[in-house]
Image: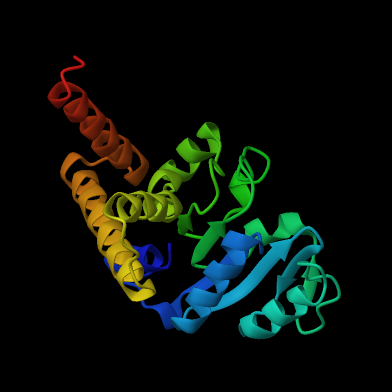
Length: 223
């Protein structure tokens, strides 16, 4: 997901250091996203977990938050160096990039009008319900959909399958290089379809995915 965030904002002529980020969720997905983005010079200003949202306009100390979470059974409860907010307020913060990274349907009709972020990267599965998706598209919000944004995990699982077939283990650097290559290629193809056909990135991702399934079906003699 990290390489996709970088490509995503780059296509929209934004730079990491000028991109404020709010991440809903600080579990396995959200915490790693926060770490990568912070190290890549993005300004992570808000994260949330079950204990609430934590906001610091100047930017959060993500490394300190990770340490605090590890010492508190995975929760940010009591983290001192940020303003503590109700979890729902995270969606209305003045940021450039919003990343829902925990639950499905968290962006919906109850909060869609509060969203100020012009960019959304869906790190969770189905975080935006259809009505909110249509509304945000009309408002000019660009959404990188879950079908692409969080596909890194299943792609890495495919790499494991390939290694098992080869009876050979790749090194960590090769896995990362291959993952970056595959995800970058997928992003560029989806972006190209969206631009050529003047559709959303979500629709473009479905066009690409369904087209590949159809081609595989025909080549496999199933249809």
